[in-house]
Length: 308
Ligand code: FES
Image (cartoon, rainbow, N blue to C red; front, side, top):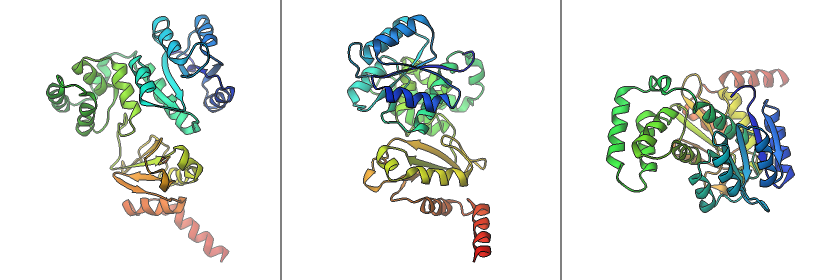
């Protein structure tokens, strides 16, 4: 990929295109829009795009038809879907066609950016030779992973259990691990990658001792999870998708933790914490590490003393 990643957003709602342009444009991505499948094909015929985000339900040429066309005519383009109704059937059909990931509609800026960054890395990652990645993967782990693949290989529906075991063995699922699995199970790389991206319990980055998952789904967003996330980021000094320097905490944004009635919600490892406020979230994190935010709270106390 030379220069900024070029992205085409295809949706019959102009507001979706505009907000994607605003969010991704401010991060330096070159974003164009098309109001339907037909317009998208015309644009794709005239130039190349690194990524195409497409809605599925559109009049005339719909998303699935567009995806099929891209796969045939522009196979090196990464495809993502934007959908308000991620039913298993539509996602399954799109996954079968080899999409990279999906973005829920409406999306929050952080979800869109996170998914885009991963998709760009995936498109770029298709090019480097395997040599570099294989060095990151200790032989003992590789042997254990091969043993698991061998054990599941002939069973139907083996991908998810193999990925779960691989994550236990390696700690996360970098491209080199995904490749080994797709080769071992004899399935396309893109299919393995799509499943890893789709389920929030899989991660492509190393995690800290404690994994904090904040829900940025609609119910939690409406109840103010953004303030909670801001507080956590500020105190842990990391962004979503990162791990603290101490390797104590990782922070992940997920689309729904299945506890919308308790919104806003976060999970730390297997524990769920609901009805959060920014300060409640911080005190919960301090139960895991009392030193978190020490400097900031000392400053606050000093300030309060002066004011008092
Ligand atoms: S939207 Fe947050 S738990 Fe469902």
